[in-house]
Length: 366
Image (cartoon, rainbow, N blue to C red; front, side, top):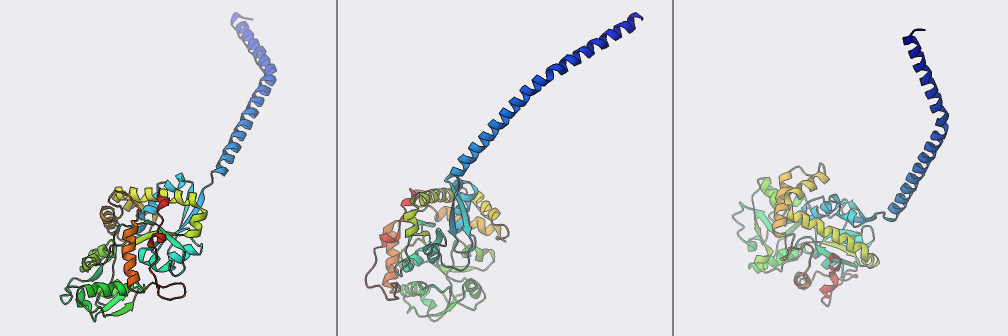
């Protein structure tokens, strides 16, 4: 055997003995590895179980929220609080109930929703009639509606010129008394025709089928401009009507009493949502559009409305959302009472003015 062949043979023999030795020790090593792997798996399972148990204790509580109309900038703060995670941070899962033609005051009173969008004039009439609800926050701080007529109506220079004309309305019991008061304050008789057309009311005025309407300046007012339908407006305050909290959030007294902590967490998150929207109108507009795909054909309407609401309506003089001054609430509600349109549960006109402070509870904002 040559030196080279002998060297190769010795190396091969060495490798064989090395592999055999490694194989003999592998059983013990594998056993140890298996034990370690099993321990790790058991530990991971226990940690997962522990996490699951913790999550089960932190399940989100569902809040149902009833819209008063299709989504619009009155609702931006609700969507912002949801999308930005403010409700989740408060342990809440929000369920937004789309508008279906129902009355939000009645819906929450019957337990079909926890909160709803409503209006000061609506709750002023509903509560004395036996609907046990409270306004827990104002969405806007001031009157957002006005009397609207086409800008080219030279025959209508002020509200007194509306005598004998046709009002396109929505069927609310407060509409005629408000129109009458404004017209009479301007020296008219306050006598006019009324047709109930709902959303077709605006179109009726645009095409001349009716003479005047009540638009929300923060929405239909902007929409008219975008449609190139010039309008002019007679604002209530210019004719002596008290300022009002046009849009509010309501809940039933019973639900609030039984869910004080949950109500406080919900309103805390909602307040954050509206105040974020007021501070970030551009981002809030896009958030509302993105949260409601296919709803808005004119993004500019949303953008301009949100900007106007942020500048003039969402926040009080201290920069806070949701506050309600009871005296200011009472001033407008007293106007409706003096108009004789508030009735009790039996349909009888109230003989005594209510305590308007009982209609409001903003403590959940704190």
